[in-house]
Length: 431
Length: 96
Image (cartoon, rainbow over all chains, first blue to last red; front, side, top):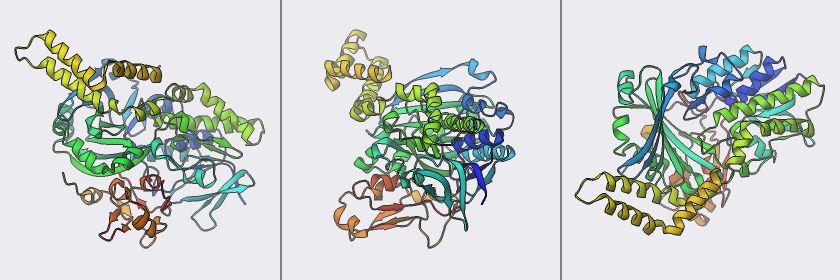
């Protein structure tokens, strides 16, 4: 019976980062992916943050299928037929090496997986891992849906995504709570490159990101987004599953209404829809994080809740957790140590030292604050839009009177104590 | 606003594992007589769950996007048995 140094379950960003790092260090690695090819089961917005990948494959920019580097970030707060927002655009983002890119995950993951194979890992597709093989409390391998499909290794790295059925079956973590995951749906709309570039005021290779909050989520806790790719736009909306459950809102209806918003419709007009996807995002943060290592196993990426929902970051946390898990295994191997829970706790220490845990700790209260304070998704977007409308409408009313009217509209909706309280809550949750 | 999600799903690529649905309703009676809200019939992004006239729910997984929503929002009854499709089957994203 052949035994590997490591088994990696899943070929998304975290699994690929782990498998690549392990294989490059000369360890024997087998990676199992259930899709027809790596990427065929994977969904993301998608923004690739260079830093996390650069630490794994420094020369990635020369090879990876990248769409546009982002030079402008727009933040929109929407009312029913208006938005108020901020833009940040800088030529500093237009100088190589670029900080972030839009990508199409099906293509990007395929490329990353080729790098994994070239590094010497054995990548097996069209194979679903059905169970972990245990010896007492210790994970010693995986069972797959192939005939004679049992595989054994010193350590199993679970990079099996947000649903992480394996970790649940093994009792490593409980079922996801509807309040800890967001459901996002999106479409990819194709447009001629020139149309897209003139519409978004960019040149070839340059891209724009629009993040949206407000009435588009119909009172639910969530956000919308629009990303520019080479010849397509990705547009989507995501809200907490607990809110979907309660409101029984149809996600595709939500998306269609967002697409019909008078500020959004002209940007996507004429786009040819070529794919519709849905995906869960683990947004529970630190408080919802499961145990991430044990005897013979580690969890990386989405399956470990490694998402910074406030900053819309996930793939960078995925790649970083995958890399740090791999580096933990490599150093234990080199020291001739076993993959026991106490030894693998080095993984947690490495995470604590990195931006991953520092950011998750910083924002640990955010999910709770947003769950308990829906006014941030409803009342405030409405108020600031109405305020802008009042100030920008020239109708013979003096500006002092307009200011008083706006102040009154805020205190009417939230009361003075409410406004101060909201500001305090946000400050506490964000500091 | 009326939205036909089947038109959206038609753009997607699938390899359907005929006769082997990867999701099953554990006890259909629970859906009919105990679950008053039947949120799966409106929240599933691929509209796989349909409310029938007699109060029951039918499930056809051919258009499933494999997101996991139905399993998690059925937390009151835990009546959804959810597995990944066999290797190579199910949704095959072209762009992701």
